[in-house]
Length: 110
Length: 143
Image (cartoon, rainbow over the protein chains, first blue to last red):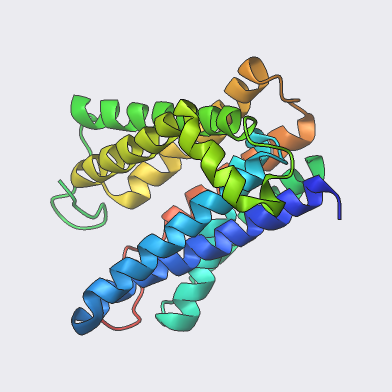
């Protein structure tokens, strides 16, 4: 895989990690007895995301990497569905499909 | 004031100046952070990923990464202030305009290519963020 390909994989990974960070913070309000453990997990996920995103920026244009970061909307929605049992309405589903398509288009431009 | 638009007592009046300024600042901070972060990343060695330790040392010696850290902190503080005054579903699609401003500034300042494909991708993402934000603030899933 070339550098651009690695950069794109890192950006997708960052979006998935962002999903875990957001779900961890939501869990911190749902599980008061493990509040600080989930806050800490969220901070660790964010630290990892910031590091990987920095590496991604060495390989991909920022106009592409920042826009593809919107994939975190998709990972947050899917993880919230699986872990937190939140519903995905038709409107939100349509929005997620648009974001996925837009992000794929951006990736193709890299 | 965080009032859900569909509930009685919702605010439909003029945008308060403080909120308008906060939203504008969110877009400016997003744009500055992303483009400066890219500039900072370019200071890293080409094989940074295969040698993360020396990359971390480079980060510590480059003042521009301090600017990145400060901008991340300012951005979070400002975002929390914005959310004090507005619903997420209102604020998010507006600050998503930073997808446009980052593309514009990176083209002017960093010389990145602005293609029709990129413009279409950004437009789709903007539309997607708008639709995602239109959902009710709570969709179930227990307390």
